[in-house]
Length: 249
Length: 310
Image (cartoon, rainbow over all chains, first blue to last red; front, top):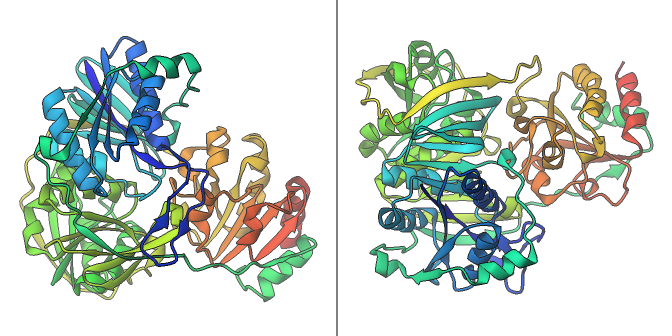
């Protein structure tokens, strides 16, 4: 059984981005880029399924600029067997990515696609669900546990107020939540090995997908700032302030 | 222009998130219809009909709608989608699961987690964990939108008298099945609906230590939350998580205990009316957003606070 794992190159989660002064976007020049943390969890999960003998091949996929190849190499260092980059300089919206992934899924015929639940740059939380709809597959989003057995995926999901378990007929889509697993540290020998793994590059046109953005970004602004408050000496003062000044208790 | 809201409900009643979404729908589309797809969900449909500003409720009932499976609910929304200018759902685990399926099938972009409606086709939404606010304009014929509850007031749950139209349920897609649910039992208010929240972070040191926050939450009638660091460390369940990848909250009072204030956490709580931070590190970033801070050992300060509250 083959698993496809899409990975996105994003600004590293430790970087605090700055809004450009002309309001056209955020400044990502010379900023550290990494694999989206939820995608790392997805690669780890696919790799563990392979190590457990449930899966035979893990294919990492990315879409975007040439440098996404680095992200694919990281996925291969974790454990993906090969990589595919859909190279384009166009800024991709989730719908466009879902269409590219559908085209690749039609070609590769995986039984399972594991994606991160959201990317930490645009915070959209859409691609997995859109891909499931386009493929006509069932989905289990926000997964904290995945069990593959008898042609089914039994997935525990993190929902508001607790957990929920679904049984999906394969092929299916799973999107990862934080607690699904803890991705391994990538070792140097594995980084070296990853450099030798196959990486194919294709283009949206080759897949027959129109990736033109549907949304226009009118502007990007700094959020309203909270003014810093005061330090109070003790609990007595705090309770008094909350009662008489803030009037919230 | 008519906007359709996909209701989040438990078949018996509407979730508060639906009321906030109705407000956003009215701002974006004017007239508001609500889709209640459920199983024996007559009570939820009646509740939707009573919401101020709703002019029509569309009720589809089938046993396979009972557990809100995304495949089936999305299909039901698609069956009626063509007559709407906007389709909205709350940006909760429920709405986020369903709505992108609707957008993809309609071949339109989805605009996630809007916090403001600037015009019927223009919306504001936070990106990069709330470190930037993007204003986006959609050229699509149908605007598909998830709504962040903290950005919009709740519509009044009573005062409306919409007609309830029953429609035939779409066929069961049948590719996924509901197996079970583990609902965390708690007498405390729900995190996203609470007026006061007491949250703990990695500074708590252990899951056991969260017990020290319970008397404080009891005294204040507060919900309990946590930072991602505390969830990652296994101190508390994930559904307590407040932040970029957890819940977005904006209570009247947010008390952050032993939380350093990573940007991912601030993204989830910085719109709270009043923020209190208790942390032993005076340099902790949480103090930069707090209205009131106490620098000290939480294991001393929290019991003092409980005592002060009497």
